[in-house]
Amino acid sequence: MAEQASEEFPDTRIVISTLLPRTDTPPHVIHDINMEIRRGCAPLPNVHLASHPTVGTWDLYDGLHLHKERMGIFAKTLKDTALGHNPSTPPVTRSFRDHPRPPRTPPPPPPPPPQYEAEPEEATFPLLGPCPPTPFTISAAEIYNSTVPYPPPHPQQQRYAAAAPVPYPPHPQQRSYAAVVAQPTTTVPPPATSELGDIREMLRT
Image (cartoon, rainbow, N blue to C red):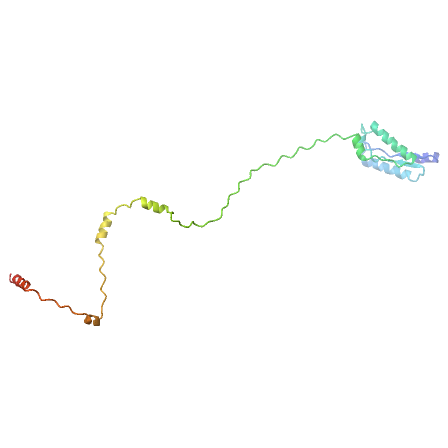
Protein backbone atom coordinates (compact mmCIF):
# COMPACT_ATOMS: atom_id res chain seq x y z
CA MET A 1 0.00 0.00 0.00
CA ALA A 2 2.83 2.43 0.83
CA GLU A 3 4.57 1.70 -2.49
CA GLN A 4 1.32 2.15 -4.44
CA ALA A 5 0.53 5.48 -2.72
CA SER A 6 4.08 6.73 -3.32
CA GLU A 7 3.87 5.93 -7.04
CA GLU A 8 0.45 7.51 -7.52
CA PHE A 9 1.22 10.63 -5.47
CA PRO A 10 4.95 11.25 -5.86
CA ASP A 11 4.71 14.91 -4.81
CA THR A 12 2.60 14.22 -1.73
CA ARG A 13 3.93 13.75 1.81
CA ILE A 14 2.45 10.42 2.89
CA VAL A 15 2.22 9.50 6.61
CA ILE A 16 1.86 5.92 7.81
CA SER A 17 1.29 5.06 11.49
CA THR A 18 2.79 2.11 13.27
CA LEU A 19 0.53 -0.52 14.77
CA LEU A 20 -0.74 0.31 18.25
CA PRO A 21 -0.56 -2.28 21.02
CA ARG A 22 -3.55 -4.55 21.59
CA THR A 23 -4.52 -6.97 24.29
CA ASP A 24 -5.55 -9.68 21.81
CA THR A 25 -2.11 -9.78 20.14
CA PRO A 26 1.18 -10.64 21.84
CA PRO A 27 3.59 -7.70 22.10
CA HIS A 28 6.37 -9.46 20.16
CA VAL A 29 4.02 -10.00 17.19
CA ILE A 30 3.15 -6.29 17.09
CA HIS A 31 6.85 -5.44 17.31
CA ASP A 32 7.66 -7.68 14.32
CA ILE A 33 4.86 -6.08 12.26
CA ASN A 34 6.14 -2.56 13.01
CA MET A 35 9.67 -3.59 11.99
CA GLU A 36 8.32 -4.80 8.63
CA ILE A 37 6.53 -1.46 8.15
CA ARG A 38 9.74 0.46 8.89
CA ARG A 39 11.77 -1.58 6.43
CA GLY A 40 9.10 -1.18 3.74
CA CYS A 41 8.82 2.62 4.16
CA ALA A 42 12.54 3.31 4.44
CA PRO A 43 13.30 3.33 0.64
CA LEU A 44 10.25 5.50 -0.20
CA PRO A 45 11.25 9.19 -0.17
CA ASN A 46 7.81 10.71 0.33
CA VAL A 47 6.55 8.21 2.93
CA HIS A 48 7.05 9.11 6.60
CA LEU A 49 6.42 6.88 9.59
CA ALA A 50 4.56 8.07 12.71
CA SER A 51 5.48 6.10 15.84
CA HIS A 52 3.64 6.07 19.16
CA PRO A 53 6.11 4.78 21.76
CA THR A 54 4.15 6.23 24.69
CA VAL A 55 0.88 4.44 23.92
CA GLY A 56 0.25 1.28 25.89
CA THR A 57 -2.54 -1.14 26.64
CA TRP A 58 -3.54 1.00 29.64
CA ASP A 59 -4.65 3.66 27.11
CA LEU A 60 -7.26 1.29 25.63
CA TYR A 61 -10.70 1.30 27.16
CA ASP A 62 -11.64 -2.15 25.81
CA GLY A 63 -8.21 -3.58 25.08
CA LEU A 64 -8.49 -2.60 21.37
CA HIS A 65 -9.47 1.08 21.01
CA LEU A 66 -8.02 4.25 22.50
CA HIS A 67 -9.74 6.32 25.12
CA LYS A 68 -11.36 9.50 23.86
CA GLU A 69 -8.81 11.80 25.49
CA ARG A 70 -5.96 9.76 23.98
CA MET A 71 -7.29 10.23 20.46
CA GLY A 72 -6.18 13.87 20.48
CA ILE A 73 -2.58 12.90 21.24
CA PHE A 74 -2.65 10.24 18.53
CA ALA A 75 -3.95 12.76 15.95
CA LYS A 76 -1.35 15.36 16.98
CA THR A 77 1.46 12.87 16.38
CA LEU A 78 0.14 12.21 12.85
CA LYS A 79 -0.15 15.96 12.14
CA ASP A 80 3.39 16.75 13.34
CA THR A 81 4.78 13.95 11.16
CA ALA A 82 2.84 15.20 8.11
CA LEU A 83 4.06 18.78 8.58
CA GLY A 84 7.63 17.67 9.21
CA HIS A 85 7.68 18.92 12.79
CA ASN A 86 9.47 17.13 15.51
CA PRO A 87 6.67 15.47 17.41
CA SER A 88 6.56 16.66 20.96
CA THR A 89 6.26 13.28 22.57
CA PRO A 90 4.53 13.57 25.90
CA PRO A 91 6.33 11.92 28.78
CA VAL A 92 5.30 8.49 29.81
CA THR A 93 4.18 9.76 33.17
CA ARG A 94 1.44 11.81 31.47
CA SER A 95 -0.30 8.70 30.21
CA PHE A 96 -0.24 7.30 33.70
CA ARG A 97 -1.62 10.56 35.02
CA ASP A 98 -4.41 10.64 32.46
CA HIS A 99 -5.34 7.01 33.00
CA PRO A 100 -3.88 5.87 36.26
CA ARG A 101 -3.72 2.23 36.97
CA PRO A 102 -5.82 0.91 39.79
CA PRO A 103 -4.09 1.61 43.06
CA ARG A 104 -2.30 -1.28 44.55
CA THR A 105 -3.14 -2.37 48.01
CA PRO A 106 -0.16 -1.50 50.16
CA PRO A 107 1.34 -4.47 51.92
CA PRO A 108 0.55 -4.69 55.60
CA PRO A 109 3.20 -3.21 57.81
CA PRO A 110 5.56 -5.71 59.36
CA PRO A 111 4.76 -6.67 62.93
CA PRO A 112 6.70 -4.75 65.52
CA PRO A 113 9.68 -6.56 66.93
CA PRO A 114 9.05 -8.26 70.26
CA GLN A 115 9.92 -6.22 73.25
CA TYR A 116 12.34 -7.84 75.63
CA GLU A 117 12.88 -6.51 79.09
CA ALA A 118 16.49 -5.78 79.70
CA GLU A 119 17.86 -7.82 82.57
CA PRO A 120 19.33 -5.64 85.32
CA GLU A 121 23.06 -5.79 85.40
CA GLU A 122 24.56 -7.34 88.48
CA ALA A 123 26.35 -4.82 90.62
CA THR A 124 30.03 -5.57 90.91
CA PHE A 125 31.98 -4.53 93.95
CA PRO A 126 35.75 -4.61 94.36
CA LEU A 127 37.15 -7.38 96.54
CA LEU A 128 38.13 -6.03 99.92
CA GLY A 129 40.28 -7.65 102.56
CA PRO A 130 39.18 -8.27 106.16
CA CYS A 131 38.64 -5.17 108.23
CA PRO A 132 41.48 -4.45 110.68
CA PRO A 133 40.60 -5.21 114.33
CA THR A 134 39.50 -2.27 116.40
CA PRO A 135 39.46 -1.92 120.22
CA PHE A 136 35.69 -2.36 120.16
CA THR A 137 35.61 -5.42 117.86
CA ILE A 138 34.57 -8.69 119.54
CA SER A 139 33.95 -11.99 117.81
CA ALA A 140 30.87 -14.15 118.12
CA ALA A 141 32.95 -16.95 119.73
CA GLU A 142 34.06 -14.62 122.50
CA ILE A 143 30.49 -13.56 123.17
CA TYR A 144 29.40 -17.21 123.29
CA ASN A 145 32.23 -18.26 125.65
CA SER A 146 31.55 -15.37 127.99
CA THR A 147 27.83 -16.11 128.29
CA VAL A 148 27.73 -19.96 128.30
CA PRO A 149 29.22 -21.56 131.51
CA TYR A 150 31.48 -24.58 131.19
CA PRO A 151 29.91 -27.87 132.43
CA PRO A 152 31.39 -29.37 135.66
CA PRO A 153 34.07 -32.03 135.15
CA HIS A 154 33.00 -35.67 135.08
CA PRO A 155 33.74 -37.78 138.23
CA GLN A 156 35.96 -40.12 136.25
CA GLN A 157 37.99 -37.15 135.05
CA GLN A 158 38.36 -36.09 138.70
CA ARG A 159 39.75 -39.56 139.64
CA TYR A 160 42.23 -39.40 136.79
CA ALA A 161 43.28 -35.99 137.94
CA ALA A 162 43.76 -37.24 141.55
CA ALA A 163 45.75 -40.30 140.44
CA ALA A 164 48.07 -38.28 138.27
CA PRO A 165 51.68 -38.54 139.55
CA VAL A 166 53.05 -35.60 141.39
CA PRO A 167 55.96 -34.13 139.53
CA TYR A 168 59.32 -34.54 141.26
CA PRO A 169 61.09 -31.45 142.40
CA PRO A 170 63.90 -30.39 140.24
CA HIS A 171 67.13 -32.30 140.92
CA PRO A 172 69.76 -30.14 142.52
CA GLN A 173 72.60 -29.27 140.30
CA GLN A 174 75.61 -31.54 140.85
CA ARG A 175 78.61 -29.75 142.26
CA SER A 176 82.27 -30.56 141.74
CA TYR A 177 84.53 -32.12 144.38
CA ALA A 178 86.44 -28.90 144.83
CA ALA A 179 83.22 -27.01 145.57
CA VAL A 180 82.15 -29.58 148.17
CA VAL A 181 85.57 -29.48 149.97
CA ALA A 182 85.65 -25.74 149.91
CA GLN A 183 82.19 -25.49 151.53
CA PRO A 184 82.59 -24.76 155.28
CA THR A 185 81.49 -27.57 157.60
CA THR A 186 78.81 -26.86 160.15
CA THR A 187 79.43 -28.11 163.70
CA VAL A 188 76.55 -29.90 165.37
CA PRO A 189 76.20 -28.82 168.98
CA PRO A 190 76.30 -31.67 171.52
CA PRO A 191 72.96 -32.82 172.85
CA ALA A 192 71.90 -31.47 176.15
CA THR A 193 72.26 -33.57 179.32
CA SER A 194 68.56 -33.81 179.84
CA GLU A 195 68.07 -35.19 176.39
CA LEU A 196 70.72 -37.92 177.00
CA GLY A 197 69.00 -38.99 180.18
CA ASP A 198 65.73 -39.33 178.39
CA ILE A 199 67.32 -41.51 175.75
CA ARG A 200 68.82 -43.80 178.31
CA GLU A 201 65.49 -44.26 180.09
CA MET A 202 63.88 -45.17 176.76
CA LEU A 203 66.57 -47.81 176.09
CA ARG A 204 66.12 -49.45 179.45
CA THR A 205 62.49 -49.90 179.16
